[in-house]
Image (cartoon, rainbow, N blue to C red; front, side, top):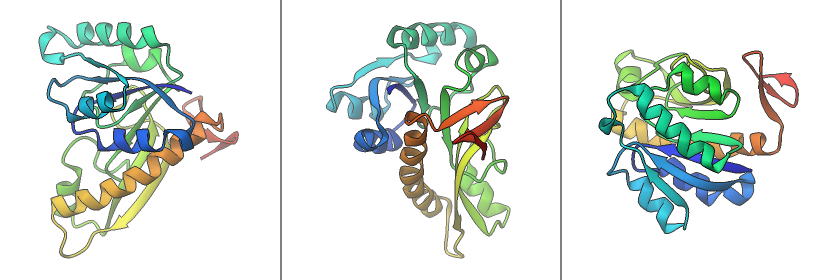
Length: 201
């Protein structure tokens, strides 16, 4: 399956996807970053994957940035767009164009803790569990239909960094598994419902 991965940072989930690409059934045609210093771009180059940097700060509006992003994406005609630490809110203009083809991984048990700083917020809220969610991307921020989640217990000794490390380890397991479902044609979005083997998740 032809894929494009969007990143903003170190690209650890990108590396996990690359390492598991045969298992997933994925061919990553291109990695795009909106940050010039994203280490994930180096990871992609080391694997011989095409890369593009589209610095959102050089555009006067979100729409101008997304028009450029769409132009690059459409050149590759991907079957799936994978968000892997892509730290930009995407407008309905973008998400509706690729609806059902964009997946994201988020470091919380959605719908709890949408947005940023999820680990600190979970600890501050005295949650007993935290975790990771994979979901379809829709126009609602971190609000698309949930496909899979993995909870972990918050330990009394946890701080945001230690919790983040344990959540990230689970991200590297769950994301390839879900992407494999999509590549196999088992996972679909229909009428804003995530379906696995034609059954609502």
